[in-house]
Image: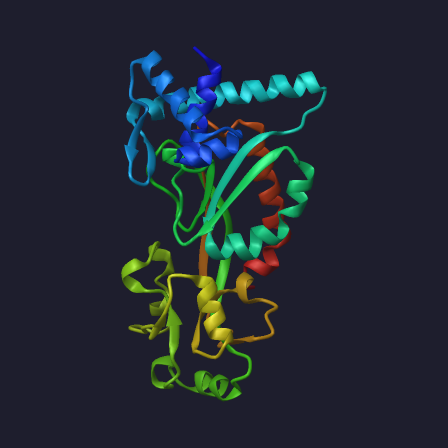
Length: 295
């Protein structure tokens, strides 16, 4: 088995396209394509389906990934021993929700980056998640516990959400305190129901039965800006809204509780780069519990 070809295979499996794999390997896409094709010919198996959106692992490809990951981990250990140190290297891809990724992880990531300068870190913070079962990411921080797949899962943290209004509309604050939101005439901001990427985000009914959003966005960051800009009122995670002078918490007695769940493929759980990031994230969550959870 040519380990060099397996490195190309692993980069395409992680990145999904020849161009991104080539950029990670600092070669051209033609070289990546040639090496992957040579590996498929040597194994007499098709490892990827060529789709318009990129390269998708076949069943044979998914079977090969953990073996290639194990070889990559072994190579990293050999390199570290040769260099006489224990520096972590390679790529780490983490999929998180848009709000948690942008407002919690990103501002705190500098310490982890400084401690592990040889790691390449991909923080995929978006509306939707990459799937660790299909090796789209090394790990994911999800809004619900996955029930299927070869995954290790556990709760990462609880978090609270509340109702927020623009700080410069005290007249709205008074109305919201004394009447149901649906009867105040104030626009309600929320998610677009038919493209809601997780049922845990369908929480307006927990504020008032039948409450609907009249101004909608698939992005929680856009919702935050719309509320701060005076377009209406809405529900935001407290860690996202805390400290923003343009926002005011209204009806503080109404608290919505949710949880973040950590999921990773069981085959990569022992890898040092994975353990290092989880340990770091656990410590950050523990230190910021007062920000995440409304007491």
